Length: 427
Image (cartoon, rainbow, N blue to C red; front, side, top):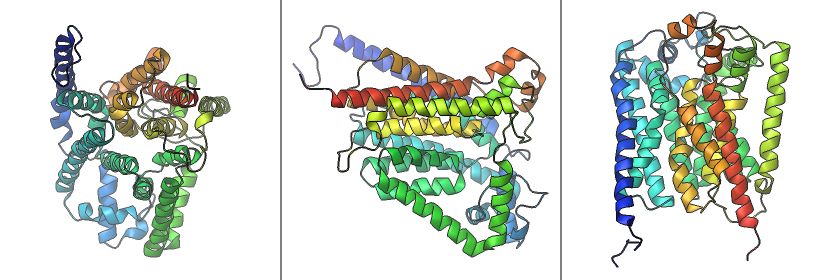
């Protein structure tokens, strides 16, 4: 028998079918990404990128004290972030847009390369069929990637940092991995939900490094820009937005979906307002129930014994943390769902490496959650405004939230199964 042959009748035929299936999946997935890609290239003035460009321009022009003025409400980042935006602010708008577009496209491809390298190093082997299937899962999130490119968002760059952080953590470089997580948190606060999951899993080096980078970033921002401008950021971005929500179609948080279901707030109304008491109560009850159920199902995985070997749950912890991020924070923009590509791309290979049982419930939750979370194409605002009064349409705009809920439940069940398998008595 030749090396690699199983000797089972028809095994070669099934291998060929698997290769053709992988080829068809990656062709469909990548084709779906490429066909819309050119439409995201033309510069747009009414998206997120103008705030980044203007913030960099104001820093260079010596107008940084006007960063949070009432005529410039869109900038939602710490003053320190303007330093990274200065090169874009030095360019004409159209040139800066295209520079950001190419940078984001490179980040999308770079994150896939990092994840494929991680599969090869930590979840081997990486043959052609596995590489195609991993790419097919990755580009299933093409609509979310298109959304990031269309808005001129920084999310693809943050996803690349998260992929590198995962690869470093897998190599045992916890301090470097945590440092990158902290850098992500300086730009986008919600991904710090991962630090909460890592804390209860006793990955203390990651949490400590992330906390140190956040603290250093805040101190550096204070040193460079003064207390007054940083206080303006805290007041107008953190305090003003706290306890508020919106029902707009592109807010796929749990609170956003409850507002769509239980109120008549518009699908294209982006005014942040306090939720009605009934919605606020429903949201708090739902979050408490969700966290309680996860802690109970994963109780064997909370605060493991000191010195215990890594039980191989990092990939699932990432999925659980990102799922909680998308659900629990009051605002989870559509482009935040791109963070899911990191745990989703390596999920099948993690399942195989850890020899997980073929639990139908966990698999159904994870597969259906991924399908819903990746979702279909995202249309323009007028499309959603034209169907605003249709009850079933408003309900349908909650499907990505449902996907995040299914994924979170699936990852929690997978972690519980993993813990049960490791603690089961030997026969």
